[in-house]
Image 1 (cartoon, helix red, strand yellow):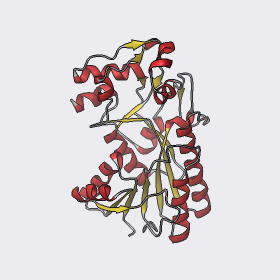
Image 2 (cartoon, rainbow, N blue to C red):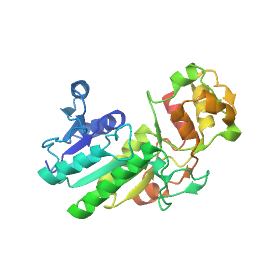
Image 3 (spheres, rainbow, N blue to C red):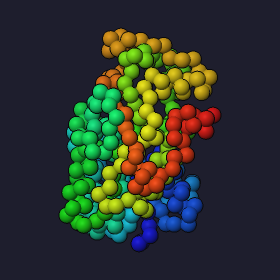
Image 4 (tube, rainbow, N blue to C red):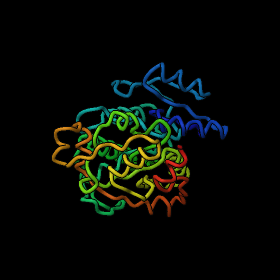
Length: 288
């Protein structure tokens, strides 16, 4: 058990991480919400276990003294994350893990009007999804302080990679705001995020907080245009921000309301992370 990795929320990122540990010959278990998820993991040779964090009593998940990656998302509504609170209750009842690496979001910084920021910038989440992530961070910090066990938090930018591009949106001809109205957004290739998660587990000091991004932000419109060009799809039509209010989804409009450029110096300097895909251009070349 001392060397076991447990990935809570073993989905898009977690499956790639679990495959890394399996290939290294290390014990790893992925925790997922459904039996279909367990079957998916087992087809890949990864031990799976079903658990829905929405349940009040989760039982003993075998997390005591393990190294836990907490990737499970919060619920889809509200401003708190009861899933993380339930997980901490499991720690307290059945035994604490040695170390937890938690994936949060860079959305906790809120709108920064396009400014360059690092991990010292105050948090000011606006969207409820980001408030839920901040609640999870605070829950885990309280747990770490009380238990004396290690916690590392990665605030993750937009994840892209195989099967994680807005191709259907582009194919549908959904418009995007014109460049002069577009906010800055930040990204990280899934392979680099997996590397960051491993580095956080292996080398980060307890209490470590890192922006997980490639350090080369661009506007949201540039992102869609670059993906369209790389895939040979027609560029999305461009509209003004005023037109967008009537033509884009509420979710997309919430993303358009925040703009920030994120530094990743701490990730590179403290953990020695070398990016395989240091910008979107390299990432798209690798995909296509």
